[in-house]
Image (tube, rainbow, N blue to C red; front, top):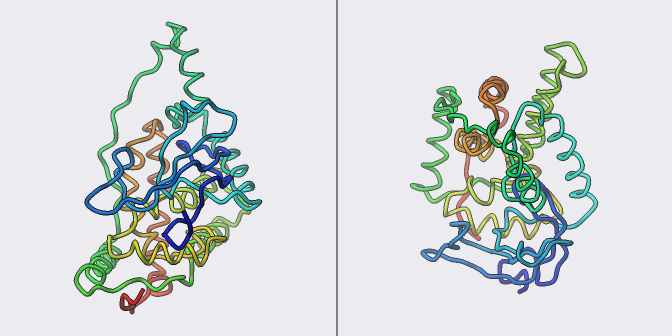
Length: 290
């Protein structure tokens, strides 16, 4: 189907596709658009969906995915995949498997299950119930954001400036100056920064939009398909991500110790966002006119 029908990708197009946190080379073999109240039975989402075939894998691995999991096949996303792979490798000693049911993971799981000794070690840990504390001024901004969109039928103007990428870079520079070093001692801070980019780009289309924003999102993605979501959206949608983080972390196999370290760093980022809220958050939303 064509982009005029709300699809960013077409049948037969070569793409990248997320499976868990890993990007695979893939091909689109079919497309389908879901609207309320008929959500896709697997993803639970509405909007464009793509039937994906993973290159080099049997058709039994084919699956329907929503648009948030699909990326353009270009040099930018190829480099992004390489950077993400390096980041995940650094975190491996502190975490169990975070990518479930991927093609490579399924093969490894069978090997683990054939070794009784290793199987005994795999123990599910209780999920942390604590949430990341959002400063009161940012809570007020979240409420105003919801009110503008739901009550007043307004939208955040897109593309935003400063973007999420700009804000994260400002935070990184701020941390470098405050610590008076070029890099953090253990590299965790850079991993958190990489993770913010990763989760934001992945979650915008599926977790961070209100219903009234979906039409704007599709139109914006069509106009700026060469950019990541973090280069289009700003502080308003970034703040919404922090509300989702507890659920996102609960669905991983990160150790409790690792999650607690992440919470410390994410709280520091929220404090930075709060201290600079007058710089990053808009005061005027726009009317819906798309």
